[in-house]
Image (cartoon, rainbow, N blue to C red; front, side):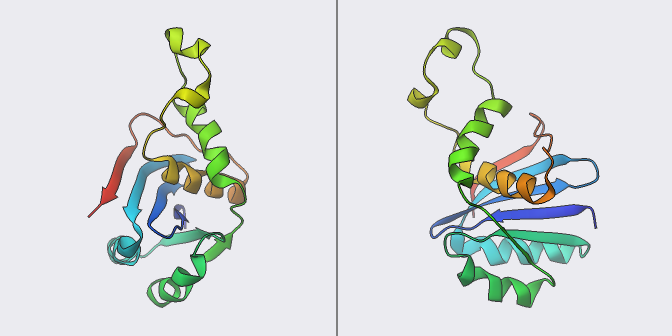
Length: 145
């Protein structure tokens, strides 16, 4: 099983990353409304049965684990301590500031709406203990409907 979907669960929105473990590449970064998570997982699992699912153990994950286990087998629960905070740092690794912006404090920039997806990336990287390639070719979507 080389394709994994990492989930950063939340009360109102969830971040998701679709990545290949063998290639260490991210293919999709998504932020969706929390009430659409199960629908998204069902669709992904229906299209590709050979997936591994990883969910963070933080905010409201207990609400999802029982339902996810009914859809897919062997959902892995992973540590997600400080994942959102660390996602801010990872954001600037992936999208470094350039020019005059690089001299300004990072805190003044409004971050990309896919920060929740980057929190899922942190969960994924921590679990597998490897950094994944998040290139500009990654499909990103915010608030799937």
